[in-house]
Length: 174
Image 1 (cartoon, rainbow, N blue to C red):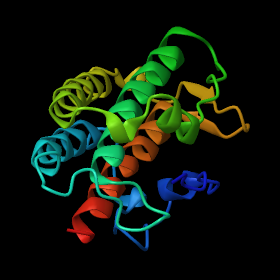
Image 2 (tube, helix red, strand yellow; image 1 turned 180 degrees about the vertical axis):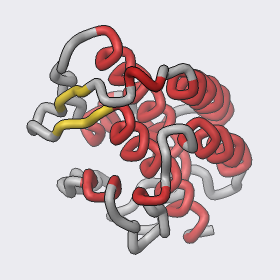
Image 3 (cartoon, helix red, strand yellow; image 1 turned 135 degrees about the horizontal axis):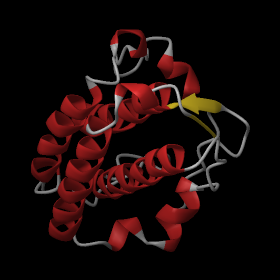
């Protein structure tokens, strides 16, 4: 069954509290993000060992495996975007259709152990990349394809919400 594509613009999480997962972007510093990512990443292998790892709770919600594959790819994508911002002046990020990726890469059929390994590796790389950002680079900017502008600092906060929210998604359904 196909899941309807996500159409929300989640950039508001940078300056507000998510009413669902409780993430408060106002309280998150760019220097907090590596720790948030590291802590969050450590929780995913157990999720991927669940008996119901491939089960969608309803017709509109990904399975824990699909969420984990997405989180792995978010780590990769945000690490790439950080590199672009640090290497180029005001780059426009290539568009990424997360829903098309989920279908094209068949998240639902991926091996949970492989996803766990890849997610941990991608999360480690992302945490290291954000930890290595120099203070002088925090205001460098990049643009999403929809025109949303991010500094390194706001990109970090925006990024941190995604895996936190998705871990909340899979835990509330267990």
